Image 1 (cartoon, rainbow, N blue to C red):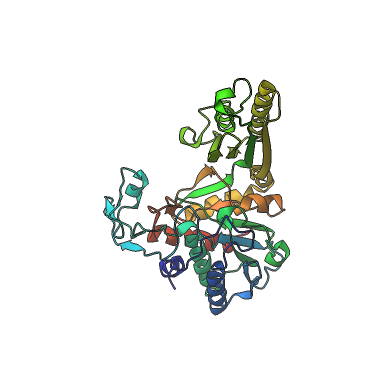
Image 2 (image 1 turned 135 degrees about the horizontal axis):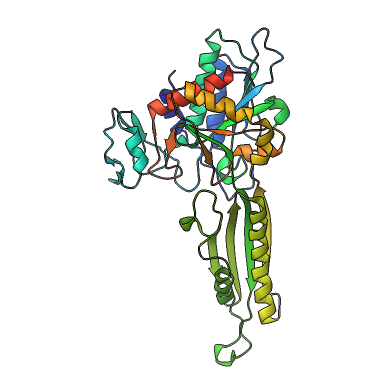
Length: 404
């Protein structure tokens, strides 16, 4: 089966994860794809195929004779799609020999345009797959799944020598829980790659350091006619708190290695207010300073009003995986070579986010991130080119048969 055929089959399976549950997986529908993938892995001849109770899919290809002592290499992609946009009833559009211009999304009439997405021009002449405008597409990360399975099929049908190859597909990556129940021992790899990146040629071994911040503010309500020197309006304190953070350090105004504070939710009344933030920075020292700045903002307000009206709760989410990858930079060099040999130009990208590989690297499994060929993830304008997926498949196959 070709990679595009697999991809189109997978994106039609609804697998959106759910922030609101505390189960694993967060949505039972993810099992629908997990079971489909397990059957397909068995069909192409994979060994030790297993779906566990938390919706993780594991499989492997044994080493060829004489290669048993090579370190096992792993490949990982996630099954869920982002809750930020509907992933139900996905209806892909296929545009052969794309001309590089505007594309009308049939379900809504919206225009996928190079004016908004200049990288579309790079896909001219290829077979473009888009959404119909009513849902996301699911290339993040069903393109990665299709590429891994197609590469496995190629390896199994070839006579190329290779060490043990390990494969895993995870749930709930999009809500930050992708490796909460990952079984390293069952997976069996010494090194791994996530196949969860974007534009072809992209290679990542740096991510943000990440934390969440929940700000709870208690006010003091009295009749406004007699509020002089007594009322404390929690909603106004929330605004005051946000004003103490750097106004330029927000996602809209930052890029590359610049970190930010991102206000994701705000509610408030006189008596109570709540702010939710995410904090991001590639530099660990600056990341810690950002968290300290939040605590200091609360201290300033509490001292100003003479009581502890503002409470900050910080929780680290993941850390920059660079320090865990640097002792194993041969993984990056091997990937660069595989990208070149697959007909792409490698470029290093510092992820302005995280991957399953962040936490896996801190769990002892060094895991850089590879491209899948997709663009505009998490939204109705998501798209990918068939030829890009084919080159990414070749990249994965070359790494499977390379030496680590």
